[in-house]
Amino acid sequence: MTPREKVLSILERRNPDGPGYWTGNPHEDTYRIYLERIGGTRKEDLFQFLGDDCRWIPADPGYKHPKGAPIFDPYGGAPRQSLNQPGCFAQCESVAEVESYPWPDPGFLDFTDVIAEIDAHPGMAVLTGMWSPFFHHVADFFGMDNYFIKMYTHPAVVEAVTERVVDFFVEANDRLFTVLGAKADTFFFGNDFGTQRDLILSPEAFRRFLLPSMKRLIDGARRFGKKVILHSCGSIARVIPTLIDAGIDGLHPLQAMAFSMDAEYLACNFRDHLAFVGGVDTQDLLIRMTPAEIKGEVRRLRRLFGSNYIVSPSHEAILPNVPFENIIAMAEAAGE
Image (cartoon, rainbow, N blue to C red; front, side):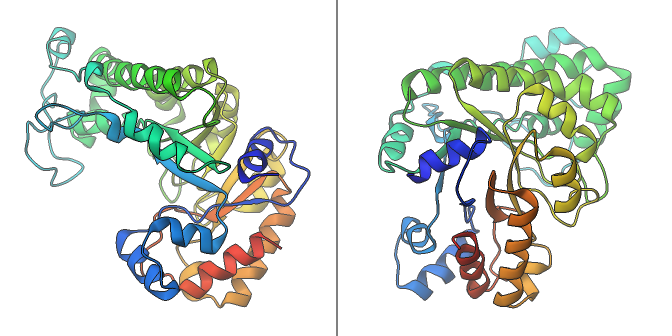
């Protein structure tokens, strides 16, 4: 099988072979260190050296505002200093005020370069789509504390802002998937709603304020026949059944040291319903353990998760403190 065929079979939970492998998207400083070690000059050189099956090509660069404006600007041009920094809707109490905001224009979308990059990786499993982190954008529009408070004091305002943010991502994905056609199989998007110990908001708030939008994004990809991988860091075990019901095919990155995100728990409860992507701990294991220990852990994960699994770090942005030898060991054990 080609890498694309293998990953598709994993997401369809019919893979007869060994697991897939994805290094992730290392930090720019990490890329520099690793490429120097192999004598490479391009990120692609690293992926080929390690035998990656996946290429992550997000579609967000396809938004090309004539004045270079970002998709969303919750601070009116000011940089974000903290997650609690009040955004432009921090004091908003009216849905009419939300409607009057200058929301992004899908007419500025041009996916020509995105499609060209996808075309440059024939046979690879391309993960694409707008990253669609609506949870974070909405939080920025209010400031995180204000966001959670307004879920109780002004829920209609929160729902209105969420709807307008997600309207853009749904339309953008529709336009992308229309021109993408059958060039790639997988929609990959991310919203981090877990902490080290639990959800960042209650399951009830999740179901009211996040789930409908996630369902819109998932349903939009499915209309075009795409498989769906959701990224969420942290402990999200309490809502994994809800996410499965919503239609996700794969879950990433499996933050191994977060509560109830260990491989034994995930495999025991969800292996028959979900493909897994990640799980090789980046908080301790990849930083401090030996290559032999890394290989032992990957083999353990393979036994637990079975063949419908993509070996990958528990966070895709590998930092420079991860020794390259340990990444090589992870890739080698994935390919055994």
